[in-house]
Length: 399
Image 1 (tube, helix red, strand yellow):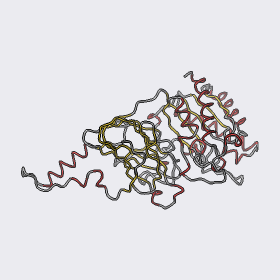
Image 2: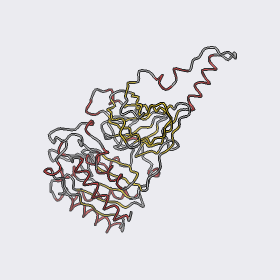
Image 3: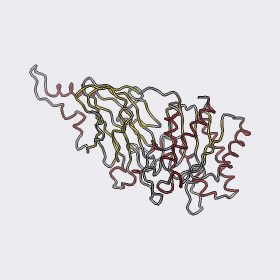
Image 4: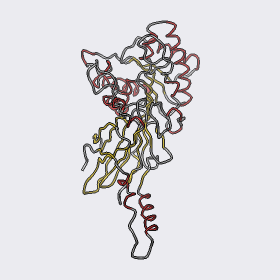
C-alpha cells in the first residue's frame, strides 16, 4: 500500500485529469463543450493547493500564482494528513533540473507515517511520485522535505489532484518552534558520503541527518532553517585568505532564500520573507566556521567578525523579538568561539538584551566518529551535537 519509491517522468499533464474532459455529445442534449466545462470544474474542485488551509507549511516557502508551492531552503516543505486510496504528488524542478549538472540537482524525500517512501534527485522538469496506492482507504501522515540546500536548486510542489472521496488537512502543530541559521553543517553537507576526500554533491546532502533537524525532532519542535554551504557572517569559505563578501548570510537573511536556480523564474532572493508567518521561541545561529578560514586568527579580521555579527543580531532580534538567541559554534573547529563569546557579551552590554546566550559544540572527533565529504561531520557527529544542543535548549528555555 505504501510504495517505497515511485518516480516517473511526466510526459503529459493528462495524469492530473485534463485529458479526461472531452466526452462528446451527451444523451440529454448538452453540447460537448458544456460537458467538458462541467467536468473540468469538478476536477478543479478536487485539486488542493499547498497552502495554509490544506497543509502545514514547513520553513520558508513561496506560493506562485499558478498554485505551485516553491521550496528552496534545506528542510523546507509541507506536512499533511491524507485520507484516501491513492496519493499522487507532482514535483516541479527549476532550470537546474534540466541543465544536466547532476551535482546540483535538488534532492527530496517523501515520508509516509514517518518512513521514507521516496528519496529522489529531481533531474527532470516535472516528476510524479505515488507514495500511497492501495485498494482500501487509509489515513496517513505525509511529509515532503527538501533534503538539499537552496543555493544549488529549488523545487515546486504542484497542486495535488485528489481522487473522489480523498482529502488532505494540515498536520498538527508541534509543541515548540525553532529557527536555525547556519552553513553547510546545518545543511547536512556530504553526510551520506563518509569519504573526506570527496567533494560536494547534492545527492550526498541530507538535512534530516544533520544536528538542526535532529534537534527539532528531539524537542518535538517545528522548525525553519536559513542555511547555505560555504557562507558566513563576513566572508564565505576562503581557501586563499581573501574575503568573500558576496557569501554573507546577513545579505539575504530577510529574503525567502538564495539560489542559482529560481522559483518559476522568480529568484528567492528577490522575495521578502514575512516573519509574521513564523515566530520561533528560540533561534540557533551557527556561523563562523567559514569566517574562520578568512580571519585565520588575525585580530583585526576577528574584530570585523564581532562587529558585523552584533549588527546581524539586531536584525534577528527585530524579526524575532521574543525569541531566545543561541550563538553556537565548534563542530568543525572552535578557534572563533572566543569571538562568539565577545559578540554575546558586547551585544548585551550595548543593547540591554539579555535574552541571548552562547553554546560551545564539542569539535568533531575523526578517530571516534569518522568524517564525511570535504571533512564535514558524519551523522554520528550530528547526533552527538543534537543531543547536547537539545539539552542546552531545554535547560535555558525550561522545556
